[in-house]
Length: 239
Image 1 (spheres, rainbow, N blue to C red):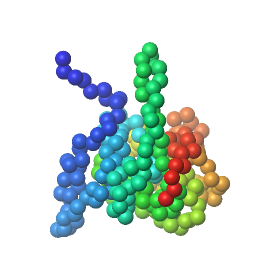
Image 2 (cartoon, rainbow, N blue to C red):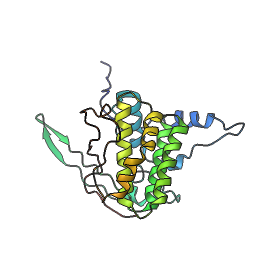
Image 3 (cartoon, helix red, strand yellow):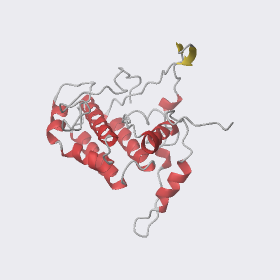
Image 4 (cartoon, rainbow, N blue to C red):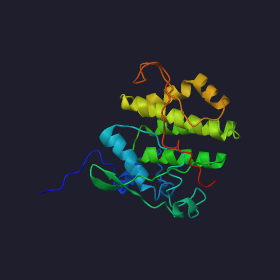
């Protein structure tokens, strides 16, 4: 019998790489050709596969953290071998589930601890979103530019910037689950100056808030806190 593919299982490889790079390069700027910066994402196939799966299969959107691509890609923004990708990973553990031994998920996401790596992380996510066609390229560029501008304006508020990223990313993800496009969801986030100011002014928090109206909140009642993957105290390494 032919093997079937489980639509709920997130793939670890990204066979669409060549197809998507060629598609990007085929879009010219006026009469000028362009080249996708593959070095930004080389080695982060599992992240790209997850994004592709969410956007083109399940529509169960979740945010990509600032450190997720940075810890997996082969090269740093300085085009040097990435020490995070080369570090030893914790040994996998087995657990009993449904009377069968399965591998426990021990994956943990490294978190950026400086302004430079926060900006590098945002730029890496930008190229990933563009490659998998999460939205219109101009809308993705606009959101990342907005966040980077916020980061450069508050270089000492590292923890607040990470909370802002997670808050904004969760908000966009939940709106896209409800059928919104990346463009409309990200524009609403960027226009909510009150919430952005509150996040940047408050004490550092590991819990992003939800930006939007009560109708956007699946449970009603306006803003709500979502737990995200980075909320595990994972601060291994420092850059």
